Image (cartoon, rainbow, N blue to C red; front, side):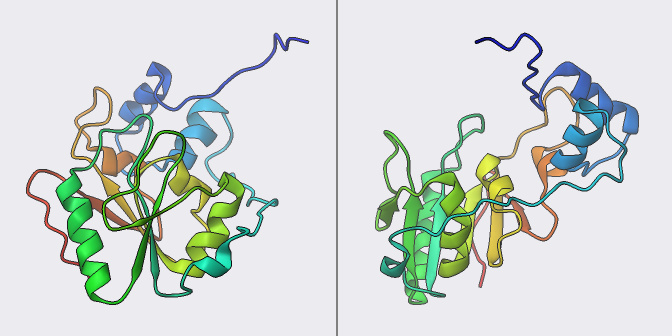
Length: 190
């Protein structure tokens, strides 16, 4: 059976880029780009929260409150330098944390971390149990946006499509620590 009426929304199409130009504003959240620019809904429309979250079956193998879930991979974003991830891992291990790398398919765990491969609907349980999530800005960040833990999003230093704005100015996440991890970036967080 084929659905001829299906529309797959994607945020990087020209009409959405033009939306950000017309609004002449920065920090237009991805939710607002989808809400207004793709679906044509009023700006005040609030997204519904996920209803189907599952508990990760191996949650008891993760040290509660003293773990960091790292997510260094994204399908459509330039990678963050391995040296930055090494700085983050070293910093947290020096503080007694256990570091895990979220991996799927052929991805490999970052050095000195433990690989984990939860399902998307299990991610919130893991990051809340662990206490800290640090990831490259990707769709996974949107999945765990409402999780109750410390959340840090790393952004490569690049402009959003053909605009003069940096990716962090378009994809920033409210309530998160949003950081641009450019060439001179040094991890120095507590």
